[in-house]
Image (cartoon, rainbow over all chains, first blue to last red; front, top):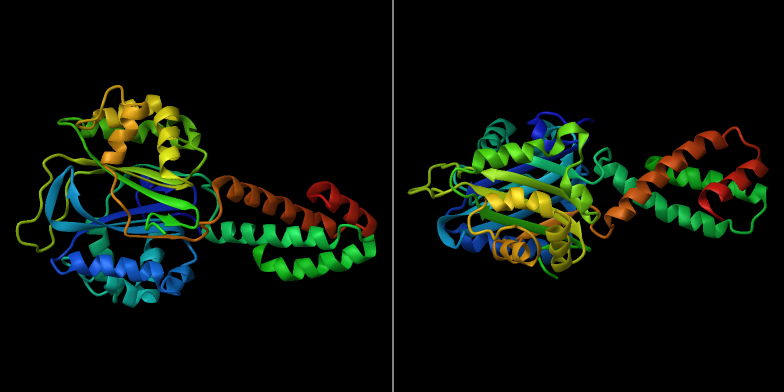
Length: 186
Length: 180
């Protein structure tokens, strides 16, 4: 899928960036650091995020002060580097991470429920900023292709090891087994 | 482990105040970095997976009492890169000297010329620590990702061609292309 549904400045090849700030309610000042801590250290906390196979890198940060001046309402900063379509990204976020969305954005002013997605998309659009310059080191690669390429590298090393001194017939058998094993990554 | 780190990947966030009257010129400069098919200056930092500059004109109020008003627009710079922050900023302040002076040189309080140790110190002073960072392949460096992608393309091509090869040719071609 090609990058769609966002300003061209947010796009580099297949990659899209999203940049969102939202003001946080008073209780979020304590809540969000605790959420970040749990997300970092609880095994499997990011399991559902991993299901969103189109995210390269994403981050959440609580901005409490700017240029030395403390904000009355801290800002929750979210950025993601992903591939695909903007609409599909938000849809997947809402449907797969419904609970997680409430956990991260529930303390933000004006945050609607993740579902239905219409009000949530309008909320993100209202708070999203367009990049003036966005760069990807491998713009033509989707997250899935990067993960496949890295998985293939390991399998190829193993194949090389197994077939170092084998005859062509044995190699043919190993090659066929290799192809069967890695076909999803090709 | 630091919240800025996932695997060996680091998430850097820097927010600097844009000097009075400089926001439009800065936006124009940043938007022209890709002119003529250029990949932009971050391509010269080979540890950078992703990076962006975003001008933050203000924050959207959404029902809060007394919403915060920025006294000046802010410049947001973020990068996902390989390895340690200190050496990355050293590389950035050296390799991007020309562009950095055009970019952070338009920010309030930034030393001029915006380069070297002075720029590095300025960026460090305005750095915001990450709360939670996720990376799909945080253990892989940019060179490793690029090499794996190139190798995958070679492997796909070989798999197609190998269908027409006899066993001996396939064995020798594999060794020639991928080592044995």
